[in-house]
Length: 401
Image 1: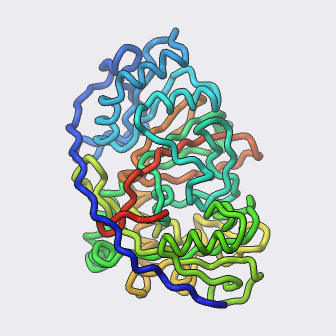
Image 2: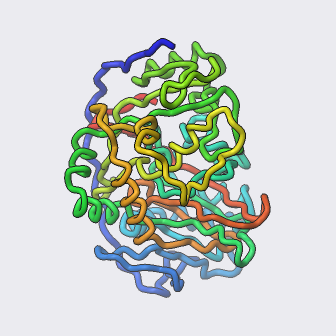
Image 3: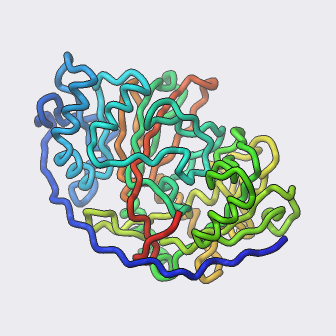
């Protein structure tokens, strides 16, 4: 197979973004005309005034969806400040009953442009349900390890909305975990300072393995046609060349031969550490921890099902090397990733879904993970909407997606 090297074009540096002032609101305080600050037993309070999650309840039992959308638009500045301060806002008790209601809620936020699935570079297989709304992940094992949404690509969302259309039955699990990335990074720096320094200074490059057709049996089962939004190999190669990717056809992990229409491609250099916009919080913004699961799946591209447990099974260092390396070509230590995975769990909070709940997550500040559930297919339904990051950068320079 031919190897196609990375482009050497130099993008333009970007200006700095403004800081967002913190807001202090006590439980029960009003949030505009129909909202109030709520509490729940699972909340945790971290240094820096972070309440995880920050809860806003509907205080008007008579509010309808149009009224909620107007309230969102009227209180957007306040909600943005709360999101910058806490990283997650859980909206509870609002009259949102399905994809169309959720879409109206999302569209209430002005200036937050959509990152639709047919433009995104998610590994997951999703289905569109409404204007800006899609399912979360059609795979059986996807999303179970903490991650920043699509941080392994040159196009990621700045914010992620989730809406609970149908919670899992009691006792079946199905929560969504969130964990503060800047705290994980701080603790990781204490234990492995050289590793973190290399993340900051060198950056990383991810390797993606994709077949020609969607595979809903996997969490990372998106085809290369869907991933790059193309129909032919020639179109795919043109997109990769423009974005600084390297690629080979018919090559799998370890150099194994695969079908000629299976793709191995390597991203351009991407940051592994970023400052969350509007804050001074330095975050572990990457997909390194989730690579411990992706490495298991990518070894089965073209095969039905996962055949592994991403929460318990551990890949080899060689499998990690086939999926991600530092941008200088050196290995990313598996043992450090497993320690970071433990840190995520140590500082996590689980969102125990109720019907109509919406979680608004800052994708820079928070990692999230789908928790396991034991119910049959369709017994837990979560919807998603992504807000595009308009300035995706690496080393302070614009990326081409």
